[in-house]
Figure 1: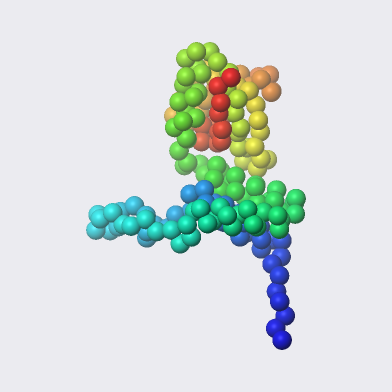
Figure 2: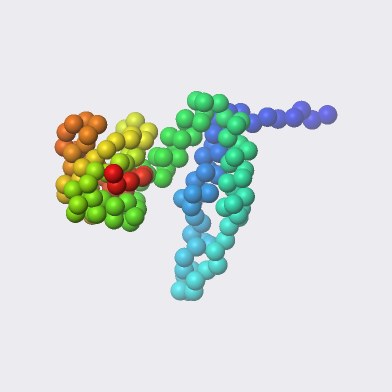
Length: 157
């Protein structure tokens, strides 16, 4: 009789993180997305429907202990927001522009590659270019510069 093999925590972390990246649209296959070499639009291919991937994530999450879940979260955030060439979210840029125009405070969640975590802070934006926003960080009580592509969430206060 064959012995039943259980997944180790590290293996569950890898599967969970990959599935989460896929469900979030971060993983793509060049052979199935965009245009092919002949200039024709290729068909959109989902090896697993995203809806089903999200259901599977809900089933996998309870199998992770607290440390494994934190490890997965760090890997996910690093893969999604740690890329230097990532474009900033246009909705977030719009909110920052509006806040600058009306001297409003922004609540934001910011991914820090140094810690691998999200920080939550209030921020008064002063100036912005295509890559960074500069302003007063109410948490640090100092002028700070933030990379736009690492702002995960923004809300005008």
